[in-house]
Length: 97
Image 1 (tube, rainbow, N blue to C red):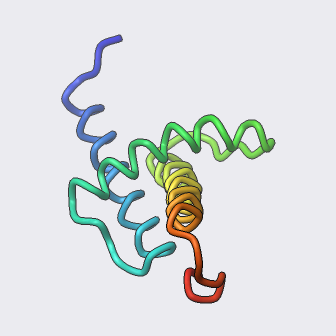
Image 2 (image 1 turned 180 degrees about the vertical axis):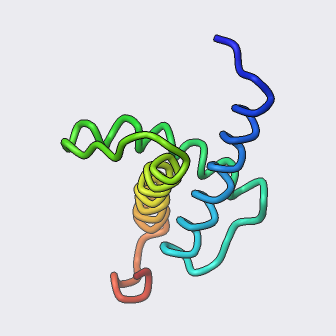
């Protein structure tokens, strides 16, 4: 598989935007440019796997890629939050949400 410079730039842009949006939605703040990028790219993989399993098809284009990656990143952050909360123990749902 060969990626051009433009497609690599689009992937990075989608990852940064999706990670930033997911950080704003789930946590209320971003995670810095590298954290947003990593969360967005991993979220894109999760979204590309999860949404078709649920019967959701968003189409093609940059906007649908951002929405798809954001949904995946939100799922990733919620799973991490649940696992981190479970490992620490204690607390109530109200404090974490």
